[in-house]
Length: 144
Ligand code: FES
Image (tube, rainbow, N blue to C red; front, side):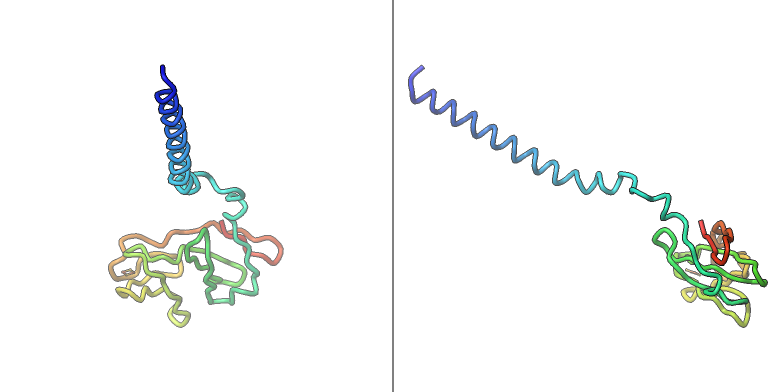
């Protein structure tokens, strides 16, 4: 083999190595966001429970908060009795509002109505509000 064809073969191998490296970097850059999306979050269990102060929820009132990245609400319907729900309407996903005078939830999008227990009272929502687990510890309300 002459010198020219050896140089050509070395350049060809170098170019192939460079292209393979660039391909590997681009593949990694494309797959990393997918992996981040699918991989379980660190400390996800700890974030699954939200602690609220009892003072934040007046008797007959509601307190809205974020639960697992979505709107939620906790009510105190009787003294010391707390219930929590997803604040996302089961019709098309609008955020419900608490009507203290009527002791019910109103969905402002299509006038869906829910009771203080989350049951559908009227309008288009097909299902009750999603109920969330509530426990009490000292002066805190733990949701989730
Ligand atoms: S989104 Fe709530 S009633 Fe339609």
